Image 1 (cartoon, helix red, strand yellow):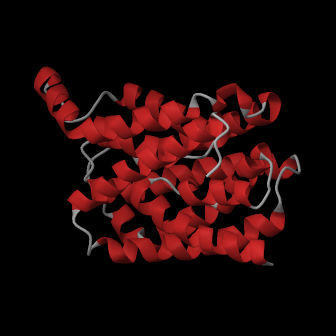
Image 2 (spheres, rainbow, N blue to C red; image 1 turned 60 degrees about the horizontal axis):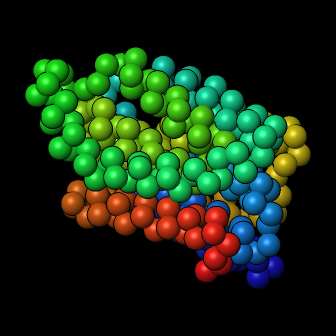
Length: 256
């Protein structure tokens, strides 16, 4: 029971962090490891649990999602994210998490750096190409890679998607946070279907964390209007560095 309460609390943190920074797994994945869940099962259970983050976030930010301006059409991105998420989940079950385990912290760190420099990089792109956004084919290719990763190893996937949106589209950060939640939810649902069919989910842990994640995800958009964009960017960058550092240390065998 104590473990489930801890996972519920971690879920609330994951819901809030997941919406603001795309780093739901900064609290959820380490919490599962802490209570003794093996890495691959922690990854699959975490993917199912943080569906609650996406559902809560979308429910709380539905008006913002409907009124979002800029970027590309939503439905092609949703369809792409679904199938990429399935592909990533299949790779995890076939090859295990060791295939990319050492690369994951680098993905997150690179995503964080790109997000940090995104305004300057996008300005340079606009000056060189005369376009406010990257070509749709290039954007969809990057999104496919990010949502494939989301299905494979969900930790930090939202951060990477957020960095892609900041770098390659003209969507306002506040809208990007909400739209990113849609892509992460779709990829996680797709991956979860694979994990559930294969019986790779610890349900008590997933449900306890998922309820907390829903609550955190629902509350976060309501509070967003009180947080200046500068601080949202700061939260994203700090969270990305912390998650990358934690994963680097875990790969080195250092436990915190």
